Length: 331
Image (tube, rainbow, N blue to C red):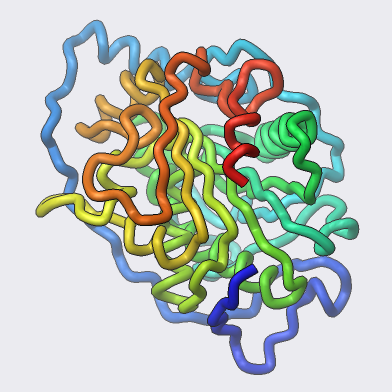
């Protein structure tokens, strides 16, 4: 693991060390800045047929059988380890229950974690906590089948709350952004207290959590190369957001990718129906998980076109039908 310039609050003692489990951090940073990058409306809404398909896709994208996946997730043990920010946000994407912009908890049995690299699976939209654990466990089993057996856990966030008129999509996007500093805070705590690396595998809207975590790692913590690797699969984030230059109207995070992670791998499927009919019709742009990076790539970023290898949006990380062998090959 490379040297990290980690900013920890003075006299902070991680509860992981104090009692074997993290229950909540004690960082008290200032209010998060509002991120309001204007949408690049270079695409028009498709016709009524496509719009109808998008609504159907939204419905299909919920739960464990995400987006018509050709394989179900495994059932995770009830005590499956997780970093969780569940119930931190209300339906308006506002913080509740006294949580801060950087707080998180650990759940499940984390007693066996901390002696080797930790792989966190960051799920996508409309996943319950049970869905989040099942997805992470399925990914862990796929990793193990491909010869990678280090520690694994779920990163579980409020992707299934929100009542905006687009079935909660806009609220979920905002909650994903606000989870970035929370995930970044966990990463720096973990690096400091265990001396171990963290890898992130981020599916669908989980990619948005990742890019905002990398932004926070640079801007809030000054933690260079804090993440060993970021793997985006079917990433529901704009194709130019992962670049070094998104142009006049959009925000780019390529500089944060270069700073905060040692490598970033993006596996994209040009025929992904959820990204084509749902993401595009709501964002007026292509997704990195469909088209790859649009613009100058960060020097530690690589696109992988897996169009011929993935049949459904929910398949990337699964045994038998996914591309986990390709993921592990990059590590």
